[in-house]
Image (cartoon, rainbow, N blue to C red; front, top):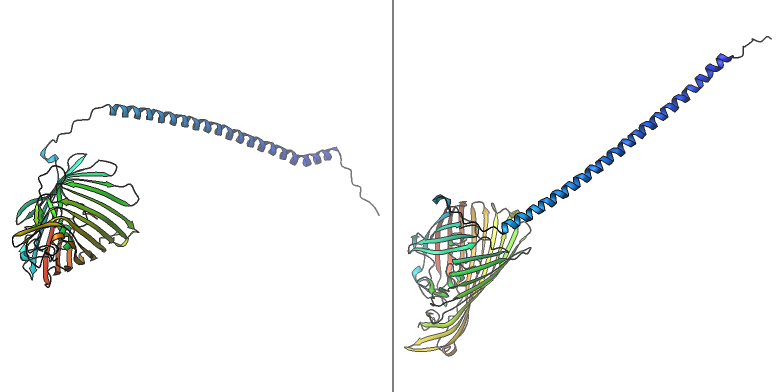
Length: 477
């Protein structure tokens, strides 16, 4: 066997081998050093920027505080200057056109058909023939109304309502009302419809039937109004609460009529002749329902004036005279409204009910064969109604109503043996249908089965138009 000779590596080869082995290690060390430097520089930059941002935020905060302090000082100085400044003189109107009141005209007319002569209409135990009337036979103008209202200035507004009938023009309402009394208070003064009950303060063109309820017409007339002051307060509560009081002249005697209107009760006295108070509470029930409940009272007196109660005694037919007495009216009312999701334009329903009780206390003079017998007496009479109105189409509504008057109780004192009050409760049934092509026009057909007179039924048919011209404010709830 033979061996091949292999030479041993020399110095050159050893150097090359060491270089190849050391190069990767040196490169790796250099890369690690560079990365560390980069990280350090980034960290230094972040620290510098955060310091600068914090300094800028502090400067901004200091500037905002300084600006707020300056604004507060300026506001206080302005308020102090304005408080010492005299009130400016009222601005004079530059022309006649500067005063632009809202004017509206309501045109109403009726065709009536009655079985009984309406001039002889009576309510047994309550009103004698001719004291009140349900209307006029045939075509009639009815009652047209002219409304004028405008703000007087930033504190007051004024309004007048003129009723135009065959008898002439009458100022039903003419009053001022405050606009900025504050704290929920509103003051009204002049001639106005009382806030008692629900229907009393609603004008005839906004009634849901051609005529008013029996109890309203028997005790208060179509609308009971007086000359005086009314103060109302809206309580700051989550539900609607309104409290009101009225002081008036007492120009009409509640429950007593002459020539188709409340009997005049001018007592020629200083001070107050009548007073009223009321409270209304209401709220929404969900999104589709709402309600209002009310309590009210009205008090007046006859003084030395004497008033006939001709139909109070339906047996003898003699004239009884009421004097030196007081008349007190108590009432409660309830209203419920429904409209799907609060949208009343296409479909809605309204339910209304009212009850009133009238109390008389004073002297009753019974005239028997020329010998007057006078003594104290007291009497309570009441009445109520309930009605429902359903709008089943944007243009059409139907309604039903039931009325009843209750003869109540009577204590005639020394005249108890002479007087036998009527033991009869008047009733009435009503149905209506009206067409409303727009918010400015209404055509209505109505039928009443009226049993106001004992042992007699009056069939009454009405056809009515109501047209509204001009700007007219919203009606009450």
